[in-house]
Image (cartoon, rainbow over all chains, first blue to last red):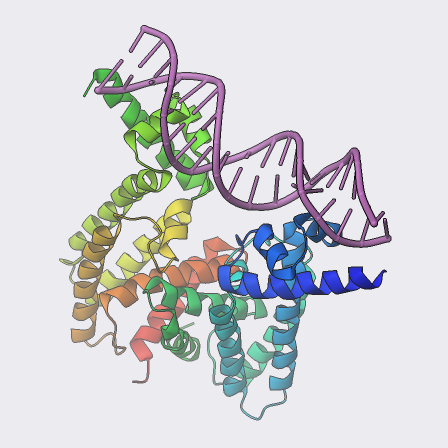
Length: 182
Length: 182
DNA sequence: ACCTGAACACCGTTCAAGT
DNA sequence: ACCTGAACACCGTTCAAGT
């Protein structure tokens, strides 16, 4: 790969990460190209579609979150670890609009993100299992459900008009996990 | 207003209600016009913008929900009434894609929906107050928060890939309301 | 090889021409 | 008055022409 191509590809990814975080999934390719200092066509030379570019950016975010989660598995307090993971995932939604929009979509509009999500679900599964075995959580809950809880907390807060209040919704959900009857 | 105009306007609203429920907010005006049997231009003769048409359709949905909620205020069990209202709102999201998308947006993209939402919040406020006064709910919760809970339940279920599981997320949230520590 | 910008299809919106 | 469809601006995507 030619040196300018490497540079351009990287510039596109960096620009896309920033623009997508701010403006979400319908940020225009034109704006990303502008910010990267390349022509629109160059974006499509490196990524087959806008969705592919989005996938490349968001895959990095999911991987970071999964890595964080693996670190939490070693913590002494299983309930705290689960709570920390939920908080990290919810806060990521608050920080990144594109991730936020993807997190609340059932079908992954964006291909190539499915495996990343599976890895995340597996770690979440372990966190949930430990919390249940410790007795702190009574509700039956899968790793997939844990991901759902992150989205629930953030979207709930958004719907009140004050996204910053997500910790309140998260604490409600965690109370629910602890005391759920059945 | 001429007779054909009345007929066309109604046809547009009916078509829009159906198309928006199925395809959500980015259903095209062309498809709505087709289904209504009119030209695209006719849609814009009756509604200044696509957003205005969306508002007209969704306002009806919100009003229906608010009316249901007012009926529930008279019920004997305050916790049950709150739960029923939450279930009705969540189920509406499951049934109507456009309502669902609007419910998880902080800023009402669509103008003219703010007052409708306020009326809904007021009824929700009363339902929340009664549930708290009855002692069944410990968490402090406003009418606005109640709306947020509907969105939280449905979006959480969506994020697991199985929207039909919203009752599980709703029951977690209601458990949280009952037992929240603080 | 890779980059560029003109070109195309799609969609919301406008408006001149019809009835 | 109201309806229609051609026209415009915007955006994702393609590709012929340049280096």
